[in-house]
Image (cartoon, rainbow over all chains, first blue to last red; front, side, top):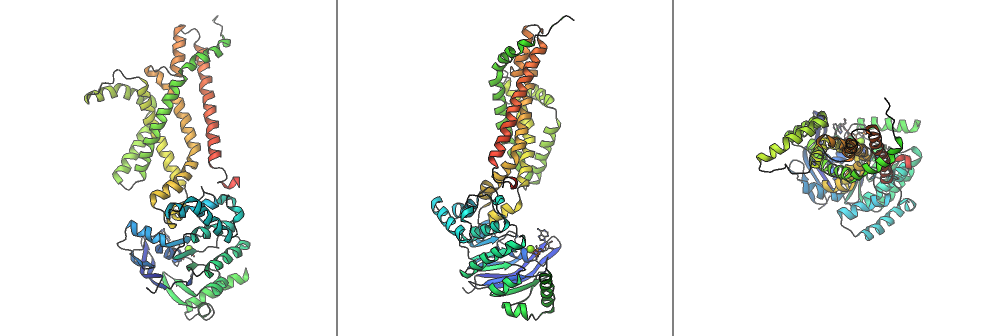
Length: 252
Length: 234
Ligand SMILES: Nc1ncnc2c1ncn2[C@@H]1O[C@H](COP(=O)(O)OP(=O)(O)OP(=O)(O)O)[C@@H](O)[C@H]1O
Ligand SMILES: [Mg+2]
C-alpha cells in the first residue's frame, strides 16, 4: 500500500446536474490536504462521496486498502468505510439529545463496543485536550459555536479514524471564535493523522497543509504544496479565485 | 316550571360517577397502546419505499380522519359481529367496551401516525448524517439519535391526542358502555331524569379536571424530557 485515501474517477450528478466530473485524488498517510474552490464547485459533495453520505455514481473510494466501487457497493461496505473515516461538519451536527461527553462516547460505545467506563475515561481525556473539560455535562445547545465545533472534532478524533474529513469547519462561526477552532485543528494535524480539509482560511492552509488542491466545476484544476499553489499558482482560474478571496479577507 | 336545581348534590354525584373511572381509564389506556402501535406501523408505511404500501397507508389515514367517530362506532358495533361470525368467531357475548376500544384505536391511529411522521421529519437531517459518519448502522442511528429527538418533538402533540382520545371515550354510552358518562346517564335514569342537569354538570366537571391533569402531565413530561437540549434553556 502506498496511499491512505485513493479516489478514482469520482462522478456524481444530482438529477441533470453533473457535479463531480471524474475526480482523482491520492493522499498519503499523514498528509493534510486543503481543498479550495468557489461555491458550488463540489467540495462538500466530494467529501460526502468519500464516506458515502452521498454515493458517487461512478468511480471508487479506497481508504487504508479498503476499496469500495461506487457502482456496486453494499451496505456492509459502506458501514465499514464510514468506520475508517470521520467527519467534522460545517454546522457541527452534534447529537442534540446527548451531552458533550455522551456525544464523544457515543461512537465508542455503540460502534466500537467499548465498555462504558473506558469510553468515558477516553472521552474525558480527549475533551480536555480540546479545552472542554468544564463542559462535559452540557448539551450542545448550551455551548458557543466554537465549543460545539471543538466537541465535533473530539467526536471525530476519538474513533481513531484513518482519515478525518472537515467540511468548512469554521465558516459557520463568529469571527472571534474561528481562531480557537483552527488551533484545535492544527493540533490534530500535528498528531500525524491524515486529514482532508475544505476551508477558505488561506493562512491556515499555508501554515498547516502539506498540499493544497484547487477545485472548480467538479474537477481538480491544480494542486501542489501550499507555497507553490497559494503564492505562485499556474492556472489563471486559480489566480482569479485566490485574488478574489484574499481581496475579500483583506477588506474584511 | 317549579323545578329547583339541587347544586349541593353535585359533589355526591361526582363521587358516585367516579366508580366508572377505572373503566374509562382502562378504555383510554388500551386504545392508547393500540393506536400508538398501529400508528407506528402506518407511519412507517407512509415513509417506506413501497409505493403501494404508501398509498394504502395514506388512504387509511385519510379515511380514519374523515369518518366521524360515531359512525365508526356503529359500523364496528353492527358490522364486526357479523364479519367475525363469518370467520367462526362469536363475539355476541363480548364486553361492549371492546367496540369502543376498537373504534378509538382505529380512529386515533391516524392522528398518531401523522404525529409520528411529522416528528420524525422534523429531526434535522444532519443528525442522521452525523450518526452515519461515526459508523452507526441505520437502525442504531434511529434508536439512539433520531427516535429520542422525535419523541421530544412529539410530546406536546401526543398530550393533545391523549386528551382528545380521553374525551372520545365518552362516546361509549351510545352502545351502552357504563363508563363515566354511561354511569352518569344511568344515575339520571334511575331518578327518572329528575337530576339530569346536575348529573351532566358533575360528569362535565370530572372530564374537565382529568383533562387539566393530562395537560399538566404532558407539559411536565415535555419539560423534563427536553431539559437543557433546547436553545431557550441554555
Ligand atoms: N442533495 C443535493 N441535491 C441536489 N443538488 C445538490 C445536492 N447537494 C449539492 N447539490 C448541488 O451540487 C453543487 C455543488 O454543491 P457542493 O455543496 O458540493 O458545493 P461546495 O463546493 O461545497 O460549495 P460551498 O463552498 O458553497 O459549500 C451545487 O450546485 C449544489 O446546488
Ligand atoms: Mg460546501
